[in-house]
Amino acid sequence: MSIIKSFSVGNGDMFYIKHGSSNFSIIDCNIDDDNEKTILDEIVSEKEGKVITRFISTHPDEDHLHGLKKLDDKIEILNFYCVKNEAIEEDETEDFKHYCGLRDGEHHYYVSKGCKRKWMNDNDENDGYNYGSSGINFLWPITTNDDYKEALKLAAEGKAFNNLSPIFTYSFQNSIEVMWMGDIEHDFLEKVKDEIDWPEIDVLFAPHHGRDSGKVPDDVLKKLNPQIIVIGEAPSKYLNYYPGYNTIKQNSAGDIVFECHSNSVDVYVSNSNYSYDTSFLSDATTKNSTFGTHLGSFTPKNS
Image (cartoon, rainbow, N blue to C red; front, side, top):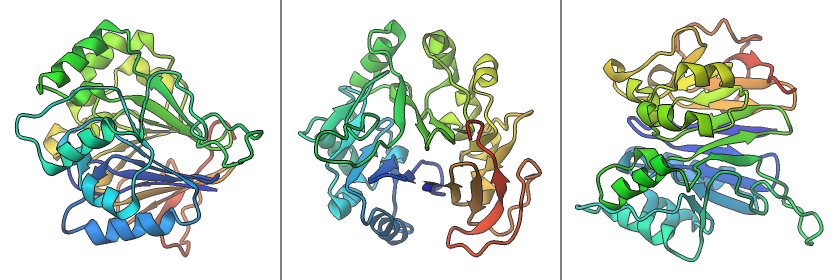
């Protein structure tokens, strides 16, 4: 079994994956005074017993790294994953400075399309350890792509960070397939979409918090063919609701948990009054769980 959790942190992102192996992954960070104790205590509790912990930073906007120093102070980040970049800010926050220190420090790992790393997606059982693979694979960036080079240039000038975002998937035992895109923008995706090998997936976390400015192009969505799109917590007037696709709206759902088994996935939300259509899920029964209210279940495509 593995657990994927999307925290409800307002206009920002924070996730973790409690892998079925000895891995634990955190994706982005948005911690403030109101949620600090709850989130940090949960991270510490859920990663207990895991040998490999990694932090994946999609890009250095404040709503994706706020509280990063507090998180690092709490758990000591020894595996910091990000794209190789020289992003600067005119008015650096403490967390941006901390991001740069981790990005440029001894424990960084720079991600790109097809990168391989032990226990991320390359489990060598002959090395004396058997920590298992995390099932994380990066589809983007292609560092030689001209449009991506322009995104790097803009970041190095302190002008824009969204299109630094990598595209990556997580899969569990050849079952569930989930995709993240950070805050990558629609216009940028239109330019580079033909450079990316798009797999069929089960769950897509809509880029840029579900904003229309980050809408995934229709031809890409057809290839991905997600069973569920999670729409983030941007203000409703900016959201694209992906008509024609099954969605869970984090603005209303609160925290979202996917409890992944080899042939089924249970979906939970923290808001017991979530009232949007969930008829695409089956087995909507009351289950005793610390994860929240059980919305139902679905069968992964590869099960």
